[in-house]
Length: 114
Length: 260
Image 1: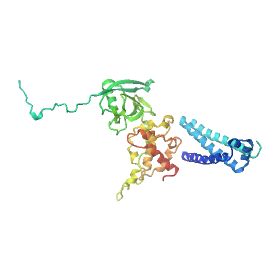
Image 2: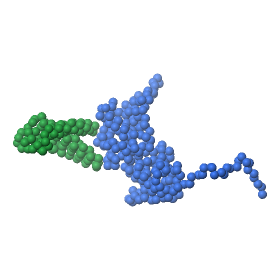
Image 3: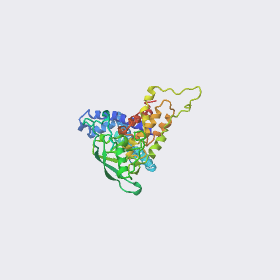
Image 4: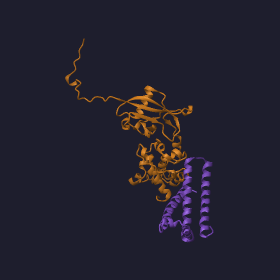
């Protein structure tokens, strides 16, 4: 993939994440902070489908943005064909694992199996 | 014995009103001495050099070479900030030695070192091979199949506004000071660098040129234009007033679709 396409995704995910995290914080502020972290409230959030979907989207956006950022930092740190290949594929794999694990949490909590 | 009488009007006025030649002051010039072929560590050697208010750093180095130590290695040529040969770190900042006066440094101790981010040949002389090869890769020429002026055709029309888009970037003298100041180049040895990117923009923005796609492909790589952090150090040190940081942002505009 061309670097400009990756960086467009990088900037796009940053902007979208800022917007959605703002919504997420505003929803936390609708009640007392201590209440928002109570067990029942947290479960209720996951059972509310639009909110659970928003959390899933935030997870994807932050994972893509974060791991690409990490990839860029590591590429600047050291150079070499093998190293760069390892960093590119490693970041992609780590991103996929994090998204899978986070999605599993959201799904299980949403379905009430956790 | 014959006597010569000087006519009255030719007598030299010796009144104290005549401006006296300013006495030279002395500064300490610290020169970084290193010879990588001998694996010796860099060390500084100090020399006392007389300077006038117009003396440049290059002149002090040449004074050392002429009178104190012939073995100091330094590259220079034009002595008027046109050839870009005498780039070095002067009191920690990349500058042209021929274009920096001792008086503007406001210090009696002047330290000269080879530029950062370049392989050192010896003392103050660095290897420009990577700079020139990157410059060449950017295709620094007008790409246009119709560039030959045929009988009955005219030169390409270029308005002052068209010229303004790239003019400052064509003042680049390839001295390498921008690359030396770049913090990304310090860690990423494969980074194209501000000099190459500014030249890519210079030709891409030229309305006579048709090689935009070629150049954008070259800079749109993992160690290309996207690795610039916009620190702006490159623009800060350019002796010719070129603003490579701006060129990089404008070039990014083409890649992000803001510019056509």
